[in-house]
Length: 232
Image (tube, rainbow, N blue to C red; front, side):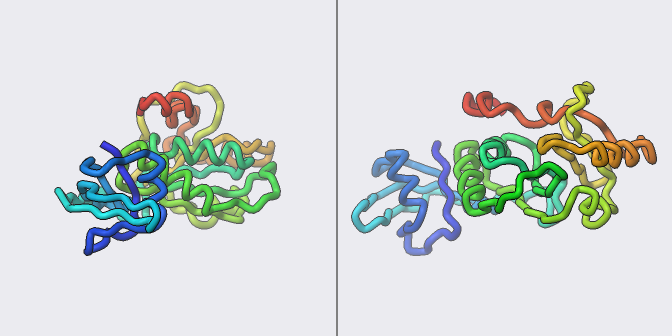
């Protein structure tokens, strides 16, 4: 059953806005039952009564309502990915597959070799929203874009967390996301680490090896072509 996002469920049963484009593009027909979500835990099951392409609105009738309380409280996420800012094509693909991972929050920071570009957060949000709909999720991961270098980031916002470092070392990892206290913080390898950045991670690991784990990011997020097959 199809899932569609709307920022606010109308009390009068008339849908407008971006959801209309999605209904039209997926060729939803009158009398079909669909799911609508606010991506904040609420899911409405509704029947499409009429879709007016000219007026760009749809009339629905409510069938069922469900609210699923998330086990975590935003903005404190249980599984956070610290990801270096990379080129546009890679970021687009990452946000396509993000809903198929176990991450509740992603922080995009600048590594030494990150490209000098302005990230189009609106575009990434649209990609993420559509992928969430396709993966039938009702919660949206929180996205933070930081201007800090990774060394500054570790020394500031996440200095109190027990970090799980995710480096592309090829070292075998345990299944799933290991927990450190109430929070797991992972660091993705993409972006081209400098020697200094790698040494920083190594120093953190040597300081308290019990708090850190080296693993391969590919063991956490499926490649995009696997996700397109519905494997998650």
